[in-house]
Length: 275
Image 1 (cartoon, rainbow, N blue to C red):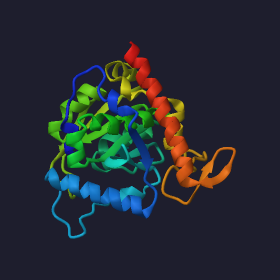
Image 2 (cartoon, helix red, strand yellow):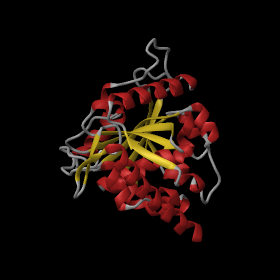
Image 3 (tube, rainbow, N blue to C red):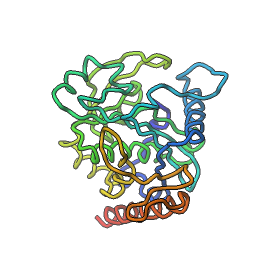
Image 4 (tube, one colour):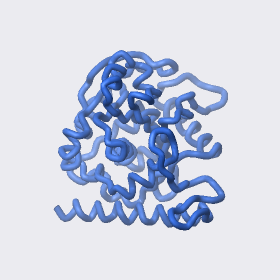
């Protein structure tokens, strides 16, 4: 739903040169949330999606949902974009797509399907111009979430103008719409792809969508009713939990884990560059 999805690059190695410069940071602290809310406001105002606000911030109640993971995407240490990932199950149904297209999604959730719904996608307008591959690297998180949570389907709630991007990259199909969401000026369509069936096709066309089990675990493991596992705190606290070592200085531990993630992404990049 943001202009960052408008950039389209040629195949076959979109984003390869940028991949090992990217850090994905889970948004957890009040300061981080403020920065993401300000980024959303700038991006959505630039795209003409929302009315002016005196606060110049854009929050919504779904930011606090138990089944939501909000990420900040940094390139070379600079905040460039953000996306909020919702995991939808028969028990957890909070997301933008479920709220707007509940009549379409609830029957399928009742049957036990698991959806990944990426929402509140936004890119800093200047960063989007500097890094045309940014939408690919931002939405890579949705594919990682599908793998981690063993989802059946990846969703996308997008404007009509962005349908072609999602159809080309993620093999999405339109399943409903368009409808208007409260507070957003443009009508939105609901797209979906069968992740289990189509992932290898998507990986073959856009290899940067691949990820390691370690990278997925580092980003999505957390102690919650959705998945009762411990996770390291990646950013934003004075102390972080590290497997086997307990509490350690958060900044040092994030740098160590971030380095490992970048090395793994570099290995993935080298693998598909050899093909």
